[in-house]
Image (cartoon, rainbow, N blue to C red; front, top):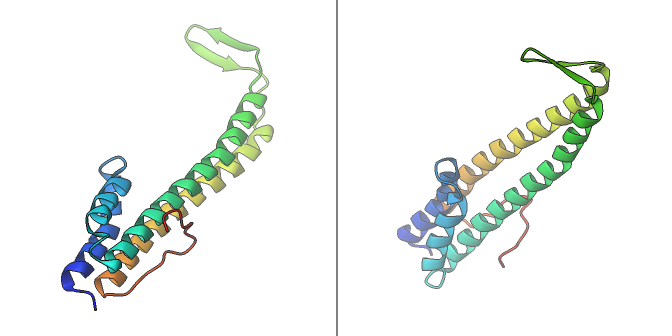
Length: 151
């Protein structure tokens, strides 16, 4: 049976990952601090700390993969469609022979990448809230699609 303090610390471990919106790398720093200070004292906090960190590392990997797939395609499409015969007239930049037909691929890739990123962030937010509620109720929770980096 978990104590109220353990439940609160486990829930706060999950909620501390939301600090990423205010503090750079806060989603790693604060859960590591909470988890490493209490992991030897409570198996419940140890479980939730590992889950929170594994989920954040998985989200970083998914975001990085999405960026590594989309960015080269976008850059290749842009630079292959911009001709080298650009004319500069009195602070105006005119590009001749620029075709909108050839850039439709970039619009599709960019739109898909943006929607996937937004969907990933929305799912991350709600899963963090759900995990913290489960932890505050004393239940063990495992995030879906999480790679177990820390075992």
